[in-house]
Length: 351
Image (cartoon, rainbow, N blue to C red):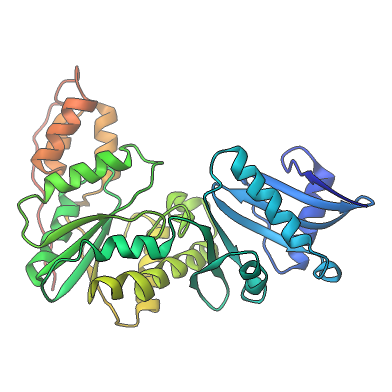
């Protein structure tokens, strides 16, 4: 008799050992930090398992001699039941190996993106096609067409520098603002701040990314920065790059994507590398030197530190006026300007 039960990986050492062994036998690398894990047991032996991380179904494995017994469907249904309990059953994703993708297709999942080593699939709505339709409805006439993708937590003069360079060289720039919520400034704040920052820029169209561009679904390592192995970050970055190249860029006729050099974050540097490798010039990846202030790159992280320190002068020197005013009004009331001179950033020679 099969028994379906939760595996508490943090507390159940025997369960975690069996879980890890099953994943490794299936060619998967066990990853902790999961939200929920279930297993199908028979006589104390683990036959199948699956986990949730947010709305992502992952770490799914079935013992090789049990793959025709419907255990995959049992595990996936248990995970959907969990999502339903949490009110998130309308849309789910799964990362799977290419050879197991057909099993998930039979359960109602469909393709989002794939590489030689991993497939990203989804089930439910709104899905990728819905997102692409929303982008198509906002298409702007003109050519050539470029894109910039920003987290903008908060927007800085560095972001504006990159956007202005793209706008100078292209008739249309689609400016994607990450929809992630695990940020200092929430998604709606960042979207509004970016729109205000570029309101007078002709041909710059601001769009949100939903789940399909540098999100907790397509590229979770981006939000963990240096706490993930480089191979994992590269695999996720390649999936994200494939979605952009194969789905988003064609829908909006994007011929170029602009990014800044990345001296501060190894994970973002890996992302730039994977974009270049996947794009192969279509679209063209244009990498520009980051904007500098007093020999240091302008970054949103530096602005966040200035906010914490109550340094209004630093915020004003690093952010566009509309952004700085918003930050000081909403985040820094009651703080005084720090002493010392303030200098605006200087642009490095692009060569």
